[in-house]
Image 1 (tube, rainbow, N blue to C red):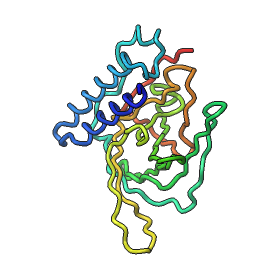
Image 2: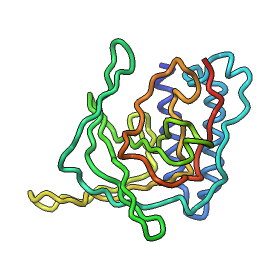
Image 3: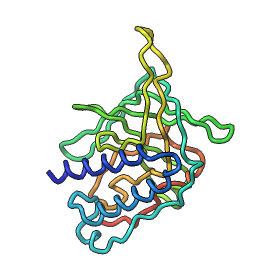
Length: 216
């Protein structure tokens, strides 16, 4: 019940972000941060230990910058490679790269793999790494999407065009201001699926959550 409540609250938090008008995105971002801080501090499903929650004040972020919000085109990945992670003795996490989120920074075209989590129900998953992982953000990378947990910044699939396959699958919002750390960034008891090498951006993403003091 606690986990179901956590996921419901996270889903509601992201629904509020998606529904915010363009003029209210900074307000929505601040409310998102405040809600995350409250969940981390008070909820029993927090990735923080009880001792960490007792000392917790707030998560640290880069300042909000609208330049880090992109509407990316999703291109199909016909190879559809799969990646498997051993999370614990009884659980394997498998994800398949179903497409690429393509967006531009200046004159450079960037590609981030968009993954489908295998298993009952499935879900979209987008982890990434960037140059800040060496200094200011968590060393193993951050997340943008995990729709199993309701982490959804917005996407729009293309309408099917008959039986012919279409390389363009639709569009997806990539707002790096909402990039967040995996649970393993907070305590060593967690094991997390991390970004494959292909999801490494060759520049610093100065947006989203910063490094947290790892415990354990």
